[in-house]
Amino acid sequence: MEKNINFCLVKKNKVYQDLYEILENEELVMDNPNHKDAIKHKIKTLIEKYLNDKIRISNLFETSEECLEELMLEITDGSEDEQGNTLHMYANSNYMYEVVFMEKLGIDRPDEELNEFASISNIELSPIYKNCAIIKSSYIDGQLKQAKINLEDIIELFTNNFYHNGVMINTDNSFIELEFSGENPNLVIGGNFKMLTPLSLFGLTLVGYNEKGNYKNELATKIYGKEMTGRVYLATLCPITNKKFWSIDIDLVKGLLKLLDYSAGTLEQRNKIEQLEKELEDDKLKNPFFLIKKYCV
Image: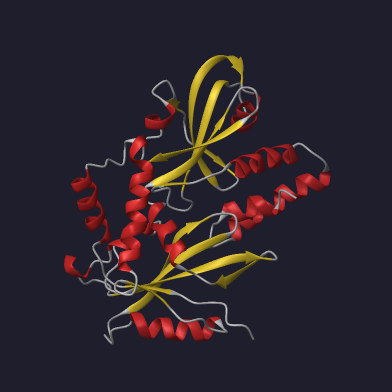
């Protein structure tokens, strides 16, 4: 059997604090779109600096059981009042990340034990202390299977805390992907865009911004179920908690539009929508990105 799964050990760290000290010294600002490339480079360099000290990629294993056994040895400190827990970190239509950690219920932990990487990267924004492990799972033949994780994954994970892709829908039915930082897409798309009421669609919470114009936006009208004019920029919040922005791409928006057509389509297409909605209800992992892709065929 091929050895093709592993985990990433992340020891307690102050990576968030370290990054902002670097940005302050370099006079770089997250909210400045012109600083994006330089900041991404600083993030990459910082994570690489942590390698083999605060961050370590494990050896490869044949089975998930072997991997989990070694993982637990790495993150357990022998305390009897600890218990294991898992939280989601990030997902898209192809793969997802989770953090595995030990916690002590009902006990206040000192700030010196905080694992900043894990704490700001999980979807609950829940404080995680001491050592933890990150695992990656990929969707293979419709099944979620543990996969190989590498340093590039860790860099992507940390970067996704600060930068998010959204999709601009133009009135000529074209799309443009635009990346923003933090919680304010207007810094990239401009102040003429007004935030719309968040929309729940196929398991996603879409946050739209509309620049009203004279021309009807056919695709945005289909998404919102009412007439929309001018350009519309779509972003999304993370599933389950909706506590922070995640990324979407053009393929995802095209998938949503296709599924909306299915809702008013043939019996077979409408059955697909019913199956999708049932899976969304039953899916404890709540990764609508994968399910949207799965049912768009």
